[in-house]
Length: 473
Image (cartoon, rainbow, N blue to C red):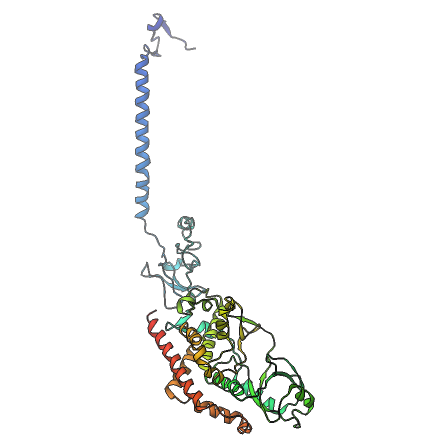
């Protein structure tokens, strides 16, 4: 209630009259309904337009302000390199290069406030500075990663000069049978007596022999000489090529009355081994499993080229080192004309289409070291050469499928092609290693040397062809 007010008039025309010092104006007569609705619509439209104007102009003003603010932050380029000489493009003149634990060179921010940058491992998204400029860190931290980009830290090169296995593979290869082991085995077989002779080691006339200290050997006996020559001279060739995959082998002579064989005279008779016959004693290797042909070499369109290597995970060192050994095996078997390994699988595909899926014949895998062991090379250099008309297409298809090589093997091939003296070297090795057996086993024949030189030139030609094909890769 307001005191001192006097109301005069009546009805809708009632007004307030001032009494004393206070006056209140009462409502005028009401607006007509149609005018009231028009006013409401006008006010709503006006409010909408004002809202739109504010919503459009406010972000523009704010973004312009943030763009004019300098950012004290170096963003990485879209390529990182693993060498210490590479770095990000500098965004500030006084930026400092630092290297993280992965070996990737990156830039810090300038001045005394620098902090290490952590290179992203699986994304090209910008790097966040830890603990610097919180608002900037929060903004970049919310950016979605790009999952399709490659790793920032590049893997070491698997290939060098286009077609040669790189250091990451070469340095991971199993050592195989070293020269000192070969020499020790040869001396051992001259000084140890045989105490047991039993069936084993493949062919019917082969025997597993045990020496007096328990060491075992696969001993190869044949009625004719060419397979004994093939076994021992293939072994010598593997050493000339620098291949350490063929187990140490040495020659022996069967003499039942000799001190070395006197303990097994009856067993020699049961084996029907004749007197004064040369045998090859190869060191027995434990823990061998089946070896399979690589998938890239199984089909009729077989290839082992740089493109196939690039598809392999660089971290899969075991697969890479096995393929490197396969590149040596293909060269070795082509040079010797070996029928009893991969060519055996290829030839038998006409009867069994799944032969290439089966374990490779006369090839084993050493479980602990990953070494591929090249067994049973008796068909090389002589027997296999006589059958080249029948099997050469298989040998050639494997060589032509190969365009990745080990540099040391390729260098040995080139050296032997250049010197042309592979026959002399093999014969010298035979005389040096087996001086007492020169009258019991003929040296490698001239015809085999001629064919071997031709095949060395074919391998060299394939290497040169691949060098030209991939020299710019």
